[in-house]
Image (cartoon, rainbow, N blue to C red; front, side, top):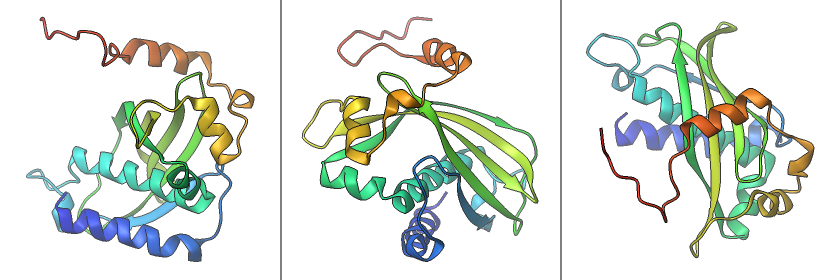
Length: 184
């Protein structure tokens, strides 16, 4: 996705957040959009990398409209994606309207987990599961309980399902303090 398209989408999300209404952190965020010419690849459908940027925008909308973003910035904490899995079902083509739907599934001791969907006319075109961690602007990881306190959520009241815990265990990479050699 070119930088102008990404910036314009993020600007629109920020400007429209107040007009679109407040969400609770566990509501479903819906961001309407359209496929631009710059979103497509040489096969004339939306590039798979663009979907990942759209998921970023969906999470941004959820955090802005729930007030979570503002509280985290005040606490000098910010979210990062630590793992994600996406499955593609149907292609989107230039000019087609769609929406990005995002919701928090739950939390474990270290992360938040979301389900995100790209939807057209009520039909799922792609679905992703995302694990997010939180970092301090001064360095280091912010524990999920602390983040819950910052945004006013009891994270222990929203556990993730067993299958998601198994997924997180399967995709986890070693800590940045451990070696992670690329041996095939």
